[in-house]
Image 1 (cartoon, rainbow, N blue to C red):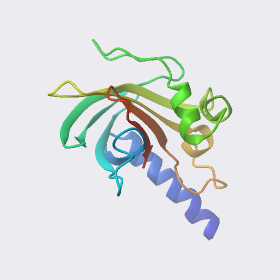
Image 2 (image 1 turned 30 degrees about the vertical axis):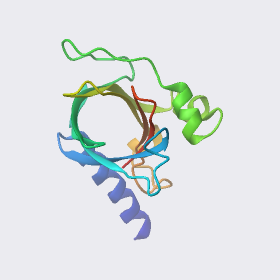
Image 3 (image 1 turned 45 degrees about the vertical axis):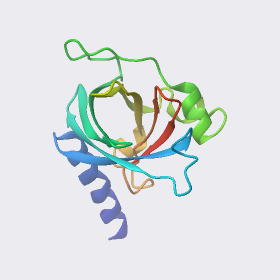
Image 4 (image 1 turned 180 degrees about the vertical axis):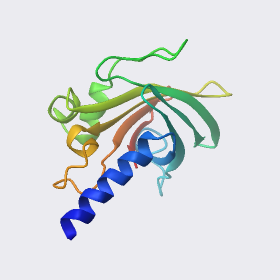
Length: 163
């Protein structure tokens, strides 16, 4: 029974994540001015899936409303019109999750989405999220769908993104 529940929970979460529904991601500052505050804040943004090509994202980060699009990059970017795909955020993954984390756990091992969020005042946030293949398939050994990510703004703040 437990194995059935774990498999069902993983598949249910995957279906919700891929069917045009939304999920909240939390941005935790880990480097920069925001991370050095006494009680480092976290920010919430809503990620809405538009399978199989993209996510729209909206939220409030550091007091500023932000919005943008992340493009799914595996097996190859399927760009919505006029949406550029930024380069992978290799050094940011390694800074947050440890040296070699991008190569060992992200590169070629699942579904990625990348893009840029912008605010009205001109602050930009490059964002990359990742879901491992085993989590996407509802693997019973995983138990839950794991989505994680990184973000960096143009003011020197680095964020861990968790769902």
